[in-house]
Length: 84
Image (cartoon, rainbow, N blue to C red):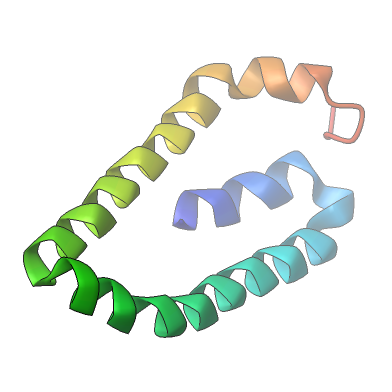
C-alpha cells in the first residue's frame, strides 16, 4: 500500500491532492465495509477458511504491484495525464 502512496504523486504530480483524497476515500470505504462483512464471513466460513480467504485476496493484490513494476513505464507513456 505504501508503494502506491509514493508512485501516484510522482507519476501525476498535478493531481496529487485529488489522488490522495480518492485513495483515502477508497481505504476508508473498504475499512467500513470490512466491519460489516467480517462477522458474517467468519460465522459462515469459520475462522480458518475466513483467514485463508483474506490471505489469498492479499496475495492476489500483490500482483498489482508487480504489474506497476514491470509495465509502469509503458502505462505512463500511454497516459496523457502523467508527468513527462
